[in-house]
Amino acid sequence: MSVTISEGWVSGTLPGPSGKEYPVKHFPQGPNNALAEVKPNLVLHTTETDGYVESLQYPVQFQVGEGFIGQHRPLWAQGWGLRSGTGNEYCIQIEIVGRSQLELWLPKPGSLGPLVALMAFLQQRSLVKTAAARPTDWLDKLDRGPQASTSYYRRQAGLWPTTAGVYGHVDIPGNDHWDPGSLEYAQLFRMVLDVIGDSYSDAMSDYEKGQRAFCTAARLGNPDMIPGPDWSLEKKEGFRDARLLYNNPVPGTVAPHAHNYSNTLSGTTDSA
Image 1 (cartoon, helix red, strand yellow):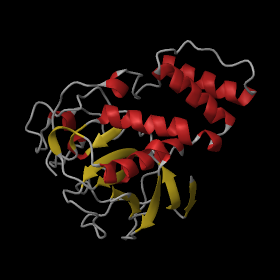
Image 2: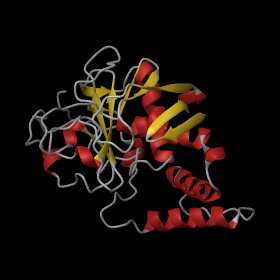
Image 3: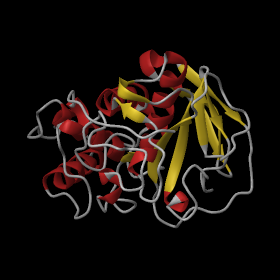
Image 4: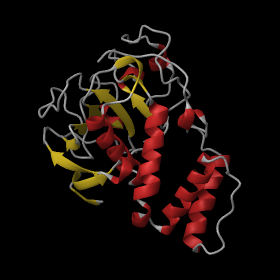
């Protein structure tokens, strides 16, 4: 991985599945209005095209497809993917080159690889609240339609924008698009966590390595693991802090739930 951030613009390459590197390209589309002064959530969209859109009609911060990551607005600026007045200031948004589906789906490799690489980067750099968990235990397959409606039940759940999670456009109140459809979030999150575990360890502080070690242990069903005796004090502190949050989740955040990592059940969608 070779990456820098300057004035909100990411430059370089990001590692994705199997260690493949994905370049970041810039397609600036202003104006740039500032995000709210809270850590943003992550919101996913689909372009409903077969190829990369160099000039988005409603620019967001990132677009992924054709084997690369495109950045259209700096990290500190709002995207315009949501309907005006419904929360653009509270999120980083990614357009995925592809078409939403009501059946469970994942993007084609040219979009999936860079999507995983970008989500892993946002998670590791703590640029979003989380890039590896949903705000609640919604099924991956969209259910209880109609989804292309502002009355869709997920929009009425009272979670947005305060509850941490990866949202789809279909989950956002005041909107009626149903992208990204029945995205297989569980499998996507596993891929993101695998990239973080395999590719970023050298770039982490000892504290971050301790947090990652606990998260890995909990994901593998061993949350009672104890810190290694040869760990540094900083790494032990990171591990213990992560274990404390796991056992005593902060009010309003998503409690640990196996569904976030291994859901294979069905659910419902919105239309882009």
